[in-house]
Image 1 (tube, one colour):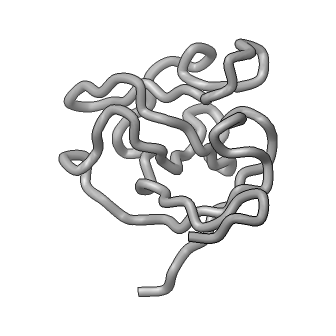
Image 2: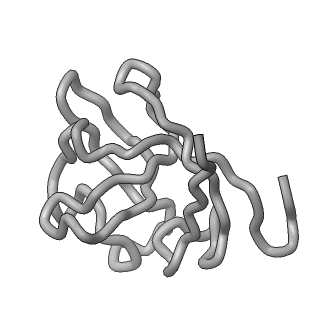
Length: 103
């Protein structure tokens, strides 16, 4: 399987993951997801846009995704567009590098 890299653009996951943070995508099933995991998902209203967000709440069919930035205007997340269907979750992401640090 080819490794997929994901890079954050923007400040929605700051301060934990500043813009430019690099992740690797880890495919997983919905049963393998937990609150607190950071995931790559398709935006529910813009299927050509992918977002990196943290899982705040999980139901059987959907997840509530949030950015880490404490500024409520800094992240477009489930507060704006509601819960995201499990079908839109592309996988968990694992940090590879940010601000000169490499995993």
